[in-house]
Amino acid sequence: MNIKYSTRVVSVHQDSQGFRLNLDHGEDILAKHVVLATGGVSYSATGSDGEGHKIAEETGHKVTSLEPGIVPVLTHEFWVRELSGLQLESAAAVIKHSKGKVKLEGDLLFTHQGLSGPMILNNSSKLVEILRKDGRILLNIDIHPEKTVDQLSDEFLTAREEHGKVDLGNHMKLKLPNRMIPLFLEMAGADPKLKMNQLGKKGRNNIINLLKSFPLTVTGTSSIDKAMVTCGGVSSKDFDPTTMESKIHEGLFFAGELVDGCGPSGGYNLQQAFSTGHLAGSKING
Ligand SMILES: Cc1cc2nc3c(=O)[nH]c(=O)nc-3n(C[C@H](O)[C@H](O)[C@H](O)COP(=O)(O)OP(=O)(O)OC[C@H]3O[C@@H](n4cnc5c(N)ncnc54)[C@H](O)[C@@H]3O)c2cc1C
Image (cartoon, rainbow, N blue to C red; front, top):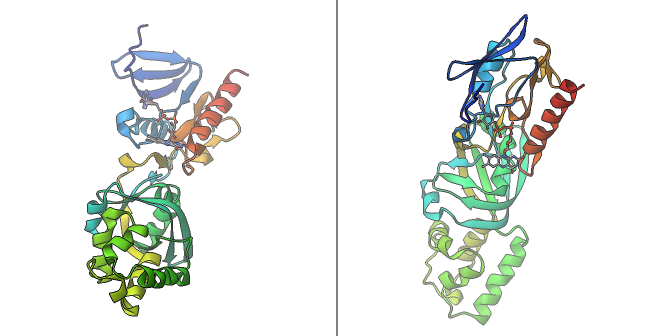
């Protein structure tokens, strides 16, 4: 049989001879074992478009809710688009939510619609969970977690003494990426043309408070298609996790992102795909 590269499986049925895989161009394949490893529903352009979940359901397996994992977030503040592509390195953030407090760390990237970067992507699951409960998240970003308020205050006072004639806008280049300075100073209510020796205590405190607690409101995540992984999938109750074999159809196996569960970035999802595929293959090959 000539199976084309683009051939897709549209359904799987078990009969007395084995599994019949119906292909999209109408032909059938008869197989003794089937490993369904069709991925999640994210980045559907790569071919993983949810057809595997449909096949799993049609063969009697439960599919848990499909949620985005490793995914950028959307913010209420529309001005983030002006900072799109700009990264705050080694930032931190504190989220106070209805069930407690979460601390995030890492590089933070502004996007056209919100935020991305390791701080967001590595904590996607937590953010999705809080969003589900609270609807929105107030993110207070600490742009300089390596410095205390007192240290920052000393730095401003020293600059006032030693570089009193320097514009505030220029001085802020030591504290922020250039592109962020106009917007930041506008939010702090400070004039970038002000000389450092004209910056009073109130103005200084406003700037320091904003450096330590820059507020952004997360209202949701990008669509699941823009997520790097799909969390959720074939329920672990419906297969044996030591072999990945279905508890409903002997000889049918599941592997990879198709199954329930997902991990943070760092290779955990790839490892899940490799390990579950290995388990299924080992059982089939005896
Ligand atoms: C941009 C991006 C970045 C990522 N970064 C990371 C990372 O840093 N760390 C990490 O751990 N993971 C990461 N991942 C996720 C990781 O790549 C996946 O979890 C992993 O590739 C899943 O492997 P899989 O074999 O289960 O599914 P996939 O790699 O999605 O492969 C599924 C295959 O099945 C095919 N298929 C689907 N339906 C059918 C059908 N009906 N018939 C025939 N074929 C079908 C698809 O065309 C596809 O080739 C990233 C993913 C993306 C998109």
